[in-house]
Image (cartoon, rainbow, N blue to C red; front, side, top):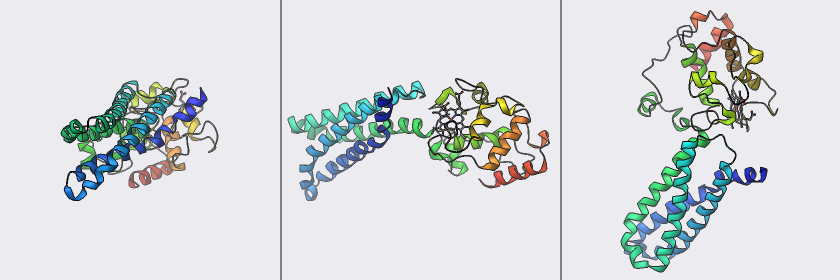
Amino acid sequence: MHWLYFFGRFHVLLVHLPIGIIYVTVALELLARRPRFAYLASAANFLWACAAVTAVATVALGLAHSTEGGFNPRILATHRALGISVAVLAIALFVLRTQRPRLYQSTQLLTGPVALVLVAATGHFGGDMTHGTSYLFVYAPAPVQRLMGLQTNHKRPTSAAGADVFADVIHPMLLLRCSGCHGEATQKGGLSFATYASLMKGGEDFPAVVPGDLSQSEMYYRVTQPRGSEDFMPRDNKTPLTAAQVQIIGWWIKAGAPGKGTVGSLKPPPQILKLIDQELKSD
Ligand code: HEC
């Protein structure tokens, strides 16, 4: 089983080849329609062969990778169906181009763009699983975020005391540092930080947060382990929470881990209030 996991992870590396090759091939064939660039067309058979071979290999590794589990089944199923259709299309286009060049020529303006759209859509759902659905827009300006449905019309807090303790303080840290593996698309250990409710539901094996009790809160345990320990979160050398963020999370759990209410209403000690203030100013 571990061999499957081992090879499967190369999916995320190899996938760049068919993406690049297919985009270049379609662009090259469009250019080759102009007499000046007609000589480029002679490379297209070879490129479609490369696209087909790398796409099939990518699908095979993707199937191996999916056995690791922890992926949102709906997003995975869509990504898999699209990925397989890219591989099938690449093979079909190679066969058509070599066997029935005239038919290929006459449908090229349709099949090329279809291939591009399929590749982009496949990549979109795959990206959701590796980076989390909000990855691309975490640093986007507020209007762009609203456009992408990432921000409600929630106003940014003007003071630490007036900030909403979960929505403004705790949730953004978890979304930024943890949701790539514990979000809507990927739920490693059965745990999602997508919403307050999913956080409180906890993971497969442990409650992530037990209000008022740090020692039973697996989330706190995980972020306070020595780096390099098996249990340390985030995994895989991803950027960890800062020491200040860990302190704030610890304070919040001890204060009962509420999902609503202002920071001020929990009467934080002055040094925590200061950390929260700095935290809010830093983004
Ligand atoms: C790169 C992927 C990755 C990132 C990022 C990540 N985790 Fe995890 N997490 C995992 C995996 C894989 C597991 C399941 C294996 C395990 O329990 O160690 C897990 C399990 C957990 C569990 C135990 C769930 C259970 O009940 O079994 C907690 C709690 C947790 N993570 C918290 C966090 C926190 C907090 C962050 C952000 C600071 C984070 N993780 C970031 C991959 C990740």
